[in-house]
Length: 461
Image 1 (cartoon, helix red, strand yellow):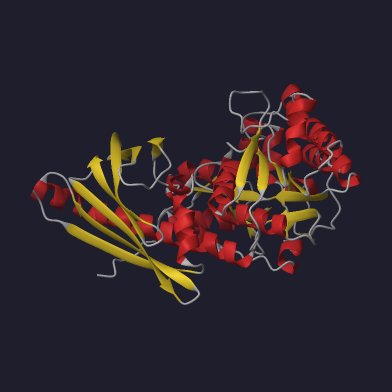
Image 2 (cartoon, rainbow, N blue to C red):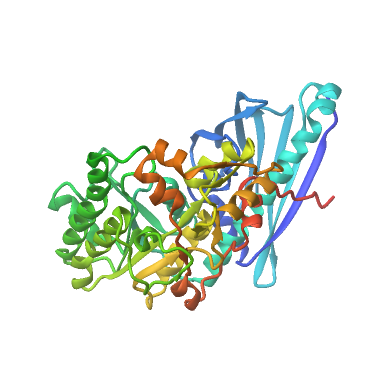
């Protein structure tokens, strides 16, 4: 049968246990708590923690897909819930989540009893890897849970109805999960009418747009990716129209409503500043004069109908968003593993922000009525590309010795290479700093270790 191993870890949470339990019980909790470095897909879930409810996952063990079926076996809100493996990668797996009051907050204790497959042989070959995987997973889960609930404690607000465009994207998907887990109702804004009554096809006529009468906040994050391939004239037009035209249409529709949303938070980009070398930039700095700068300026100007209608508008100027599941970091991982180094001279400044801070800052500006206009979504610590490459290599335990020359990048990517990889944009988060936003991550090494699963949480036993 094999030896039963045990793992236990506890985290203190800054909210009463009723709120902490509700966070775990709401739809999307499991998806939010899956570490970004794990290749786990949720095949099926009824979204319940009730006894007998099941979750079906697909994961990978030594590169091979394995289906994991878990069933909930105990349910005593707000004190505990438990699940057991019906079939999957372990010989057995039993997991208890126990909540206990702790002053004004509470503690969450995760306890796992498990057996690796193949008895003594499995313990010898895979026991250490299994424990390491568990320690990495709970280092991630406990920090994420604590930070999410700290945001909830810092920014208390009544439940709202929130519409989100781009809710299936890298940023929008995580924002949708966070908003739901903190007790809000999320309605996706989509391009085409579907059978899902929760969706709002706002660009499909007045009847659909009128559904925004019942919405408190709108996040507009949709737009064609700027990094999918070389920029031809037609691709550049699509990039512009997907942002400028669709934003203007959305804002004009909102301006006509009898009960307008109170807030519009519209994505923009630090690309609005263009390539400005070592100059330190804030929200009042002059824009650049290249293609992306022009698009971003028009994008923000397209929000004017909403501003004139009395809606509070925030233009979220996103820097480089860090996540191993998409964007710049995902594209850099493979070259970094093969000793890839700086891009071009490496002296260009990169202004970055961890994905969890992006959605955390979204939540902050949503709940702070004093914030409007442009807001830089970056950390206070921009870094040169050379330093970024060497830090990533160090976290991956690799050297960073093979630079990518500027001429090679331009040959491969054309105009996009200068705009996305070689431009230097040294941006400060003036508005967020003044507003007292509590950053989760400001140190790049710590951020990458967290995102790439390098942190481990030892068992308390």
